[in-house]
Image (cartoon, rainbow, N blue to C red):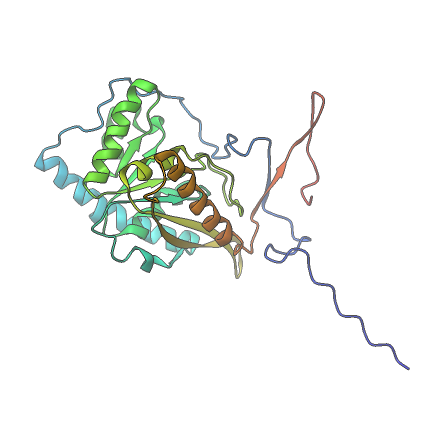
Length: 291
């Protein structure tokens, strides 16, 4: 009697591409919370304690800001993200009904330029207000442009934090959209979600604002090694009235984290592989990239 042919074993890597295929690059990390792979030289600038977040702007400045944002920047970033990254945004419908209301939008930090370009496409026609590193406003000319494009530098000290918190409150009262990358550091093309703290969720918890999140995933692209990106939007998540601010911080953080983790499983292309360094005494051991 002839034996039946054996069924092929299922691959252990369900989503990520064949393990025999080598990634474009391997990055070794030791600290998921603080390691950064942006490859941008930081000036480690600090905001002055009396940094003025709520500067009064005249009609000419506001008109110039409107033209720069909607007439020049928005069309450029849309074309760039579509052509370079093949970007598609899915499930924007969850924002329907909230365009006239203020909300907070959180995303995974996996691209350099594209991470600044994607949120305007998600929340259009609302204007983006995005938290940025103080380096972005270190030079006066650049600082003015950053502000016109919606950039808000993160406070550098406890004294400047008071003005920063006031700015967050004002944006909420004016029903603006605030964009935050809770992972804080860029890991290009990372297919997972890094653990992040709940500190930035204090603001929607205090102001009782809805929270949304977006997750960038990476998909195999025909005839090109660099993957295309698909961005999924999820939410809304609301603070619970019976919770304290601190409890809602954790609750909202967990809602966003779980939604991102679920969406991240849809990546099927590992363009850059991340491997954790191991330590043996004072020696750092870098494991096999296939581990």
